[in-house]
Every structure is written in C-alpha cells, then in structure tokens.
Length: 608
Image (tube, rainbow, N blue to C red):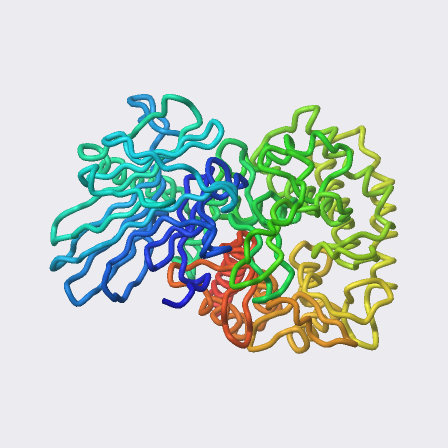
C-alpha cells in the first residue's frame, strides 16, 4: 500500500479536538483533549512509531470518501470482490440542552461499520501511542468495559458491539477480524476522560442515536449559513471546516489542526500550526460577518480581547487557544516526519517575533465587527485606542513580516501598509463612537507619514510594483492585500501594475508563490501558497478581470481533496497538497474570493 497523501484525509472534530481519517479507514492523526495536546495517533508523521486506529477490509479494495451532507461526519466507502461496506466516522456532538439529560465522556470518536452488499471481512487495528509516539501505553483488556489505557490523569477506552473476547491484545496493539454483512452495523467507540472513574458510553442501544444527534448538530449549525451565490458548496464546506478549527471553549480559531507537515517533501520548513495567529484576524472576521455567523464572531472577538491581556499594550504574533503567550518550540527527534521530512517540530517560537502588521489586522477586525455592537466597554476601548498609540511609536521599526522570516528584520512594505490600515480603522471608530480621549490628530499625522514612506520607498518605479521591503526589488504576494484592506484602490495605476507583476512573475500553472528573490529565482523550499491565489482572485475580479479571476479560482479548487479540504500550499508541478492541513487561512481566502467573484458577477448582470 502506498503512503497516503494529504488529499487522502478528511478532518473530523468537535471544536476542541480533531483527527484525520484516511480513505483507507485509518485515523493517523489525533490530538485529545485539545487541538494542541500531544497526539495519541501520529502515524501521519511516522508510520512505524506514531500509532493509528485502522478499520478496513482484509482483502484488496477500492475506496472513496465524502462528508455526509451539511456535516463534519465522514463516510468512507469500500468496494471489494465480496461486497461493499461503509465506515462512518465522527466526533460525537450534541446540543447543550441534550447534554443535561445523560452523562457523556469528555470526547468520543464514533466509528460505525455498515454492510451495504455481500459479506466483507474487515480488520481492526488499534495502536495508541502517547506523546507523539514516544510512549507505548499498556493496553488492558477489561472485558465489557473495553480496552483501556492510561497516561497520567488521562483514560482512553475502546468499546465495540463485538463480543469482548473477539478483540485481542498482542504485543503493543489490539486487533480483530470480523464480518460486515448487508444491513448489519458494527460500532466502535474511542472515548477520552480525564477523570476516574471514566464515563463509558453505551453502544448497542444508543450509539447510533448519538451519531444521528451529531448529524443533527452540524445540520442545525449550518442553517445559520447565509450565502446563496456562486461556488455555494465550496463556500459551505469551507465554513464547516472553519467551525472544526474553532475552539469552542475560548472562541479562538487555530490555523490548522496539524503540526510539522512540510512545505516541501523532504524539506525543513515544518511548523506547528495548532495555535491562533492574529495575522488572520482581519480576513477571518470578514468571513464570519459576511456569512452570518454572529455567535462565532462575538466569540472570536472576545477571544482576541482575552488572549492579548498578558502582553498588552503590545501584541504578540501567535497565542494558544487559551491566550498563553509562550509556545515553547522543540524537536521530536524520534519521529521520521511526514514522508521523511525532518525536523518534526511542536510549539512555535514565532511567538517571540515582532510583526508590525498584526496591529492593523486586529484593528481592521474590530472595525469589521463594530456594526454588531452598540458600544465597547471601557476596558475594550482602552485596549483599542492603545493599539493606535503603540503603532505611532513603533511603525518605523523593521519587523519579521507576515511570513515570519526567521532571520534579520527589515522594513516590510506590507507591514507598513497594515500599520496605516490600523490607524485608519481607529480614526473611523473614534468618529463613530465619539471617543474623545483618542489622539486623533496624532493618528492622522502618523497615517500621512506612513503613506508617504510607503509610496516613496515601498514602490519600485522601474519594476512597476510595490516591493517586499523598502528600497527593494523583490516581489511579495502579501502586497495583493493592499487593495483588499483599503490602503489602495483596485484600479489605481500602482495597484494594477503590482497585480500584473505578481500574476506574471510569482505564478506557475496559475498557482501563486508567496515571494520571489530576484537573484535566486523562485523559492525551492516551499510550494505555492494557497491563500495568495485567493488574494489574486479578489484583485482580478474587482479590477475587471473576472474571467482571469475565475480561471485562477477554479484551478485552485481543482487541487482540493475529494472532501473539499485545502492545505497551506500546493506543489505546482506534482499538484500535491503541502504544508499543514487543512489550513484555515486557505479556506478563509476561498470564501472571500468566492464572495468577491459573486459580487462582481451580480453587478455585471445588473448592468446588462
């Protein structure tokens, strides 16, 4: 069997924890009880040591994978010579009022095998490995109380509707073979508790009901979805994916549920993305507001206000879902990495970087959110106005930039533009809410200084493009956001030439790289960056090149997994998904791009 690619996986979760299920029926990545918890299955990063939870036919098969309609429950369909069978996977979820009626474990993954035709021999392999494969737990056969293993205060229990003596513990794994006949169901439950005694879910009478409740939960949630335009299904799937990346207890939205998936196979740019980047705040808020998810946008903005308390008045680049500021980065030397891509890293020392752009992104998010609130409380108002004061002090300092370059700081054009955006939004907020204590004249004067600097040093008249850094010559796709955030208009001469230059020089096969070094050529350490494609799409559409926009948009969609998921990057030659997966920023970009195309198409129709 060949090693799965990222596109062979679908994501399941419960807005706290997440897992990746392959089309071969194997859970190869699962972090419980939190997104950033140590993985209990990490075969994705090491097929020998990482551990997995696999259910698949014994004999050769063909398989396909899809999400059940309007849900985050995955249906994997196996076809063999003896018949066909489906595997339904999902984290149990239910409405809060129903939780009051009975006891539930902290987390439960339900795996339901259903015979469709014939009689198919199936195999179960259950190999949990604690702390990313470093610790092999002792499996205990507790009869009808399941296969149990413990780590510190954590209890993992595997239950099934099979007779208890059918599942055997051999060496360091549990396994069994069983038949799936037409019309029959075999149910497996993996539950987690951090208490003793653990709550064990009942299976034979209520497990199917819990799966139905889970489907109802997702269908009820997606009813808030308000978009009816073009690419409706892709936008809806992206919204459902973002919900999986939302940490329900805190409101934070993680960048991705995975760690250390490489930006190039065999490369070293392997990072942990199970945290919340303020960089994403502006575009995330825009998506939540435009799609009608008011509860989520309230929770997300409350998370921003909470998470930044420890570092105020300064902002940090990235925080944990609970607002922890120190995300200690370390290397897991015992893992070979995804397809031998080392090093494997957890944690992220980007938390210590200085990125000027985050101030503008947060203030733009606040401005987008503002129509949903009548007034901000005093503490929030002090925080918001204080961000403007910080911008005025530090805007002329070099920084690490939006792409978190781990080398020397420079004066990034995008960062300066976002500083301008931050002050622009703050001035508008001050007028809207009549915040008399704000230093409006200072904010306006600083805005003018920043714009003068950008236009003087951030635009290369010879290259006819804004550049990655002041007095530079290198292109950078982040400059496509200048028009998206209102620093520039889409049809200004400088923006039009920048869009064209990036389209011409940073794209390959209609896929866009983040940046380019004129001396070294396109970066070979990474693939093309998915969200940059969508930024290009928005610019092309709104500057009147809607056919080009649709072509780039649909090229990107063609690279999504069969279940509609997008990673951080794409190899423009092999067309393989790269980087952490699925990537929230990519799906945010997809939604915004689709909305922009739809807006332009409707305007064009109204003029016919």
